[in-house]
Amino acid sequence: MLIDRINLESGEEVLAVSRRHIFLIILQLIGFLFLIFVPPFLLIFVSHSDVVVLTFDLAEYTALIIYLYTVWILSVWVLAFVAWTDYYLDILIITNHRLILANQKGFWRRSLASFRLERLQEINVEISGILPTLLDFGSLRAETAGHGEEEFHMDSLPDPRGLKAKIMKAVEA
Image (cartoon, rainbow, N blue to C red; front, side, top):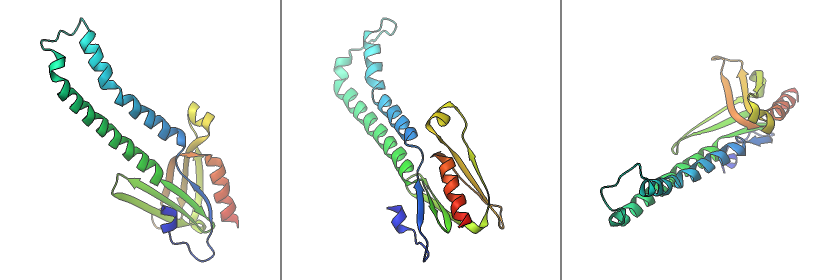
């Protein structure tokens, strides 16, 4: 797992680990499930519609239709796997010394950023919208003091106010 591969300093403890809210990946996976059923519904609509007049018999192309539908399902499966991988490998780790943000970008690229809590200048939480308010997820933005005035942010975190409180408690300690 990614947490095991991060080298912690001596005396450094992991206080919290957070991923994006699970509601968002469930919503994406439901969308992919919906996409699986689009071609059969289109085929049924076309074959039983009076609006679309077919000049050929669909029964003659059963093998081709099954092949194309199988390719369609495989493509949707791969897209769902990419979405799950992106969800699972995007992670925010709060330790008593650092804030670590791992962001997966596709299959083969990952950015790993960290900064010491002493450099923390400002931390903001933004929860906007009805669903994020009801399900308590939002964005966490941390600004650091330093050369580039770096800003670390992660969207759609569950309980961002609780994460901010943990970070502020670690800064004070």
